Length: 368
Image (cartoon, rainbow, N blue to C red; front, side, top):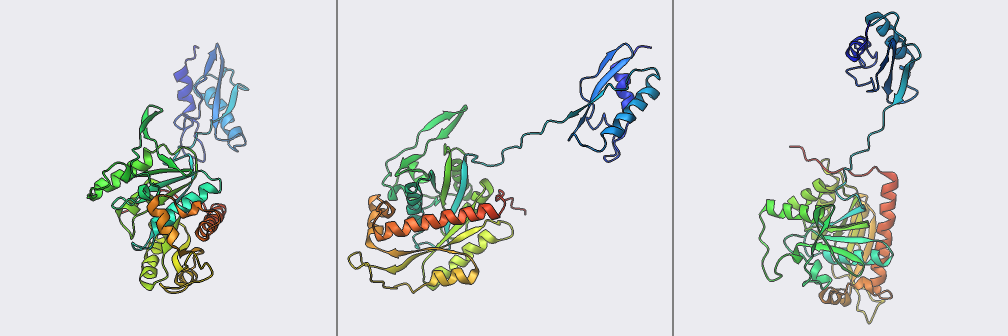
């Protein structure tokens, strides 16, 4: 009697995997190494792991099927081998696989100095030795180009693996992309919702960010489609909320915290930054004038159960540095330089704690 492959496979279709309820051929367990040499038949069975409890019983069932449906005289005993299925490489789901941590910096309302805090935090992290990127996602009022005095910069495209990538502008050790680099600074930015969200996605996905320890995202004030676009495009490690001590800002800060902690978003809030915590004249560094109220951000942090990451004073040098494109964090020995260095250290500690105690944040899927 002459054997042929389909005859063997038809016989093996009678062997049903007890746990899966299907025959081993349909399950793809019969390796494509079937050999026929006269009456000698050999092939391999594929298993997920070497210690699969079904190995012995399925090999015996295969022998019986060959003897029953092919030929009692077939030489099959000892010729059924076991192979382990190669593990599939996990599909990369991160939009930016080279970026270790993505920090969203947000505020419940405008005018609290969110962009100033973000820019100085980026510089302070870079001065501490970390590789840092800064994405200006405030699509309607981009201010990063002004704060780094790079308004005239125009990012260039470069080919990476056959794809056009945007090379970020770099200054003070910070890689930056902003919609402000692609428009005339004197033009009013009027965007429809889809245009704005598409621009943000392009800056994220097409930016050649490379390897970064931290990518800071300066979000627009309040809550908007931009915020949803960000969390639906990239995995956010955590959010930092900026507020001032005054009640109106604190009330809006609560909304910002609630948005990130909502059931649909679930981005960890690393903590609050109380900006403009007090006014200190640079010539009188010991004096503190609480012109917006005292410890409002500190009290709110305790009330809602998130850490207070830092209190940043109002000092004329912060405003001057922002206007001149020289962030205050550059000045090592200054009051503000020290404040932002301490903020950076606190953020690093909170990120490490978050990463050691929580799973990676997943890209958000908003279900209607």
